[in-house]
Image (cartoon, rainbow, N blue to C red; front, side, top):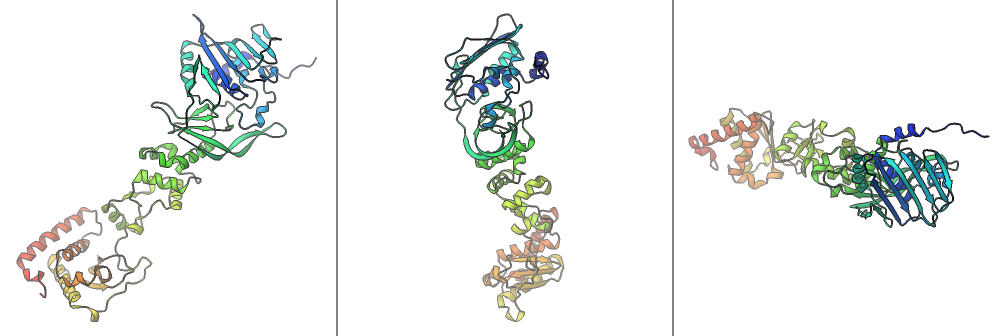
Length: 483
């Protein structure tokens, strides 16, 4: 007589299954039914009076039923589902885990009936004309029953399969969006060993209701709560751990990245700071379009990268309403992706501080003094006299004539540079007008501080304005043409 290598202790197995929750029992039976050629699956779950027991029945209409009735009680027998990535089963294990929690059970199908009682297992010839029926008494408290009834409505019934629970149809749920993408899955090789494969599958994105945790699904069956914004249903076998209640961090990150690539323009700005979005935005597979959207949501339409090579450019950016993105605001992956996508530029490229040379270090094209017009000569003299009177410094004035230099003027180390190519002759010819005085006060403020945002610079502008008013009253001729 041949003896098996080992036996399985039913009560010991039941203790391992307990932590999964009673909804796991229902889900296992439902997914087995959904994997068949069915158009209808009916689940009935009723508490028995005065006892911590429930009666569960799952009935389907598969014309062929169980191909092999021994699959109902043989652990890890070869399963034809292993070779089909669009079937949920793998190890011929689900019903056995359910049976471990049952007081008694019966499986009927087109090939016969098998009964499980305290006395053991026995087969009967009674059979169904079509379909399969699992019926059992299972240990269950009233609280556990309520939890099952609550969790049953997290299922996403497949299109074309009517699924009822206690006589009420589980309403089909339309996804917000669906798309094709490649993801790892598990497919059995020629020897029946599950191997990881990457294949294209359908991914469906569903909205969550208020107070509902977002879930990752395997073909309509919840696998694990993610805490993300959306329910995500993967249309093929998901690489699961042995307990079939979680996925690897690597797989979840890939799913999140795919979802962000598709859904970024459908999200709200507040969603951009959530952990799952930050993780996906750090992944090298995130799209440039998604990166640009997330950066815009987090930092606004006007944002620049803090530029350590041009501190004043940072201040100018803030003064112009830009948000500065500091080094610690993003992860290393987010920085890499931001730069690749061109989602923001350094402040030195967007709002560079005026310097008397080109960004590449080349000297400015200047206007020789012998080419100064009367208006230019008058303005040069006016600027020097004003500096002498306002803050007691003899300044140098350089007239640039350089269209490649993007600035109108700059000031530093007692030298004022005015760019004729940007200001135009009219600016010089009109004399000490309001726009001339406005520019000179702005530049002279940098004699006291280079930081546009500093209190020191602000106070310098106030002092210069006040002194100019007093000067205009005492020396009005200074502000007249041909002084």
